[in-house]
Length: 174
Image 1 (cartoon, rainbow, N blue to C red):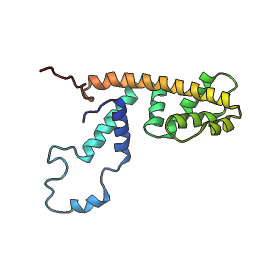
Image 2 (tube, one colour):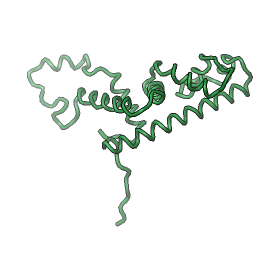
Image 3 (cartoon, rainbow, N blue to C red):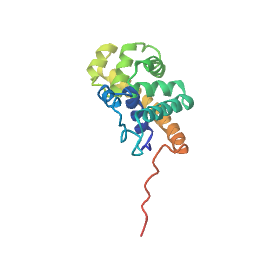
């Protein structure tokens, strides 16, 4: 398969690996004597092929990205809690001394990843004023944006060199 960009590839890979290879409804079809026309006969990839490609994309990430970038990708695309520890420590270091509220920092990360967490909830958890909470949230978003941009830049170069991305459409002048 070819992908538009690394974000498309990562979201597809995590979605594919989260689905089972064999659907229960298709188990009965496997008992029949005639299996012609099922996955692979038309040149389509089978469920096993799709899972293998998804695993290759995720292993590529693990080989070329740093632990911080992997933690970010696990949280953002994989919705895995395994990356929160490293990301929280990184953001706490960016916030400076005195900000050690792990739950508040995790809320900032969750809000960045799309969960509906308001500034008031962050303020309440961090036990600070609205301006301080907004400042911390914005600094956290800036740090996460930087991690995102670095990871996508590295993946863009690697995926282009391996032929996983569609080439940009160049209009031909006639």
